[in-house]
Image 1 (cartoon, rainbow, N blue to C red):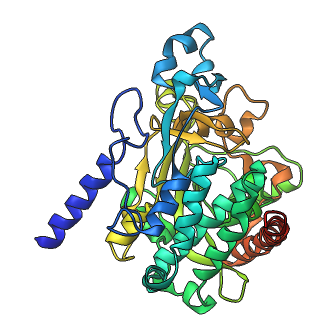
Image 2 (spheres, one colour; image 1 turned 45 degrees about the vertical axis):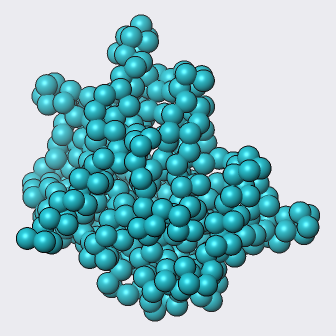
Length: 418
């Protein structure tokens, strides 16, 4: 009973951190207390997290899918709800981020830069030793720190922070053997039955493909794997379909086809090398429902036949559950939940459903035959995976490029800021 009560309390706490209803549904609550790494709000790790992932700002763009933009969207036609946007204004200032996936921070004013430097410097001695006793915490916090460094490289901001960020990441680095421990795994294909019982894990086929920037570990610091669940008895078998696409045929996607995207952390080990850990933090299920039934198609995420379910793993969940985590412990993010995205280089406040629709719609696109699966383009060069580790090894090679860029910038800027 005590364990059940604790789990229930944890669930309630997670829910109260997010605005559940209303015109700002899905955004972090301004009154929430965020304790991703330690119960003490003032712990250096929590302060580092807050500096990067809790930011009040004016977004560069505002999507017309937001409830407050309904009237504006109506004036611009049916497609505007998902694809329309306007420039952000002061009235759009909100608190963005939270214990999810998207990083809202672009740069730091001088006072906040100094506060972050103090938090990074505080990650030494006893606080650091305590963190290093928990592999999950070390890996996730190091990823937060390196992602922040990646963002500052991208925005060409705060060069004074690059060397301290890299140094903190190195202090959190663990041996490769520890990073590859199976106990660090937070997802297995068999977990899918907990959220979608109609998926048979034995039917899943992993694919390799040519990654876009959105899934390149040099920029995301994450590995990504995609599994297909291809209906049997509806046209060509999946491997035959991929071969036909490679030979120049247009895709023929049966209703019911699914793709499962899984992303996890590439860490920096104690020898300075990348390590694709089994710590997954992002799982997305995509299904082509079909277009023959207009009512069913309209009820999907894209409003034209493609459905999504998105699951993100919270840091606080890892802490409170002691790492005993599977997909059922991930937070499901709804179609109408709002997030500040930066997928295409600018901060855009919109809904999860609208963002998914940009790349995965069936209508209003020159390639309806893809049925919302961009990796079925011939140029994606999709093929059945040669091994379960192929994408992990690719991510490690991509991550090396990031490390070289960061080390060079940190060395250069530490000299110029002395």
